[in-house]
Image (cartoon, rainbow, N blue to C red; front, top):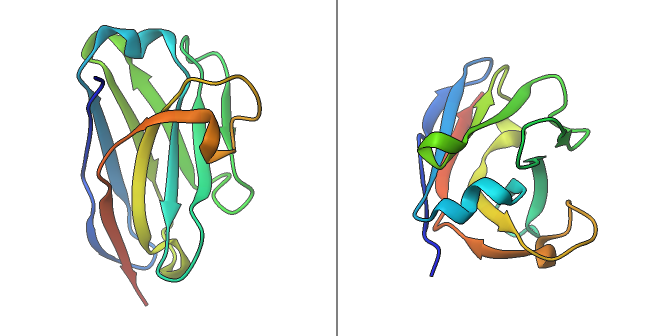
Length: 124
């Protein structure tokens, strides 16, 4: 059983920054693409960013491109999401997940393990 634990969420003013972390319990983490998703109240879970196992490829949604940066440290079994220039519309619960199934990296159903989520609130 893989466990993913997110941390780093909180309350920040618009224009501010936060860095989310996701620690994985197993070494198999280092062979999988990892992703970040978010879910705002009353909305569906949406893709934010993903990174392949070697960090050679990263993917972002249009809404965060240029503001968020995903990275990973396989030696620490940890993936990060640096969020800059935050906007009120970035307010959501942020989840990290391990991609297991082949196919589009932006589809939640391609991921098999999920963290419990961390709340990010951006005030205007």
